Structures are given as C-alpha cells and as structure tokens.
Image (tube, rainbow, N blue to C red):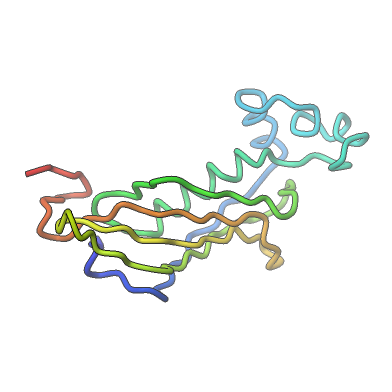
Length: 155
C-alpha cells in the first residue's frame, strides 16, 4: 500500500483489462442511461453513434474500478473532483485498460498528515485508441496518519 511520501510526479500505473460486451452495455444502460444508442444496435443505427455505444458513465465507472484496483493507495482513491473527457465511443469488443500517471504531489501546509496527488488517467482499448481521459486531485495520507489495512482511522 502506498502513502503520500511513496508517490512522485512521473510514477505510472497500469491496470488489468476489462472487456466491453453488448450485454454489459445494455445492462448498464437499462439501469443508468436508457438512451436508444445504448440499448440496442438497431436503435443506435439512426443516431450520432451509428451503432451500439457504451454510456460514457459506464466507461467512467469501469475506469474508476480499474484505477482503484491498480493504484494501491492505503487510504483508498479519494477524489476531490474529476474531469472526464470522452474522446471516442466505446464499442462492444473493446478491451479497456487504464494507464495512470502521477502529475504532482502537493503536501498540505496546514494538515501535515496528508496532501493532494494530481493524476491523469487514460482509458485505452486493445488498439491503442484512447476512449476517455480522467483527471483528478486525490486526497492521500502520509503513513503516520493512521491508515491501516486500507481503512482510514482518524487519530
């Protein structure tokens, strides 16, 4: 598990992969984003996408899962906001992975037990096409802050 003092600008992390299927696109859309171009290939034919496309929110959720599993921050991946950009549609058959880079580590001046870590993550398919970018400022604690077993225990 990593703490604030373990991270440096330029550190990189790569996630496992996640395959997008027709079934998981439609299942997500039925629950969270029921628009025709996410619900069936046939309905998507006359849309901007021209065929079935995953919801950007689904891609964002998958990205968060992959970041959480590949960025081993002891206190968890605690975001202070995020900027998502969907660059190209995510399609059935895409096998996604996330490449995360630490951009900056900023120790807090007023709270010495923590700091902010700025990250940039790219969600990329098996062909090297970037489907989404994810920029965030994460709250990260120092080892001395009382983080044990991945659970924050305030002092």
